[in-house]
Length: 349
Image (cartoon, rainbow, N blue to C red; front, side, top):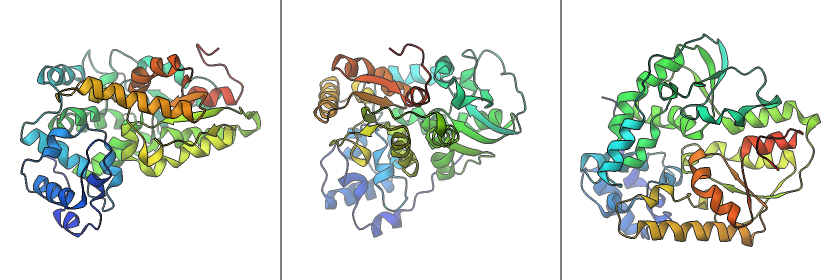
């Protein structure tokens, strides 16, 4: 079995315990934070395991590169303190099983774009930005053969990820991609962060979707017309696994001529969409989720955002309607980029 590379000595040497003191969903002082993360590292129970909203942010906050969130999830599973009701976990585990026969494997021997478990969102990768890029995982009946499985971090089921992920990687590798452009940044986080953390080999180079979009926009720079829009960006929890790629958000916005509004809940201080919080076992979780969503959207409105830009389809599903009801247009990043080069995405008015 693959094992998490976690070093308790790094926690003992940590000057800040930022993994927990920066948490936006638990109020923890430095002394308590150090005690609790050491307890968790030693296999003991902690209130942190029961109150964690699984937003991934402590992976970014940790200054020691020591994977505190992966540790929390593994300890939640080992001590059977699941963050969501067990019937939901059981249903979710069944959802991600590869089925309906083997996918058709066509060797690529070059860059490929992986839709993962979002084959139904193929309209989001149309037009000039995606010309001559082979796409794998286009068949919705077989997309779970390409599903990174990392969503099970939200369910305290690292064992499911470790069991299934090597097979997923093998399926992708059979296409012989030199680079794998990941439509969803949770997939990118899987191959660039989680796999190295637990010792799973990745035989291809993962590429973040935003880095790919930025490079294609640079190639098509002559077509870009400044959009002069004020935008807010809904940063997904999976982005916390690749904070070094978050810079491409601002680079893309600057290139296409949109202004990212200055607000409280952005960048490292971003609030999650609260989708996972809604279903948690903690009493009052739905009310808490609604309050967090209200704070997030009020922050966008106060800052003057006209557009809310999404990457994660789950965030879009959770917040898209609410954002729209508050007078802010929701849009996926790739559609915004297509607008910038004069294309009209499906459904845009």
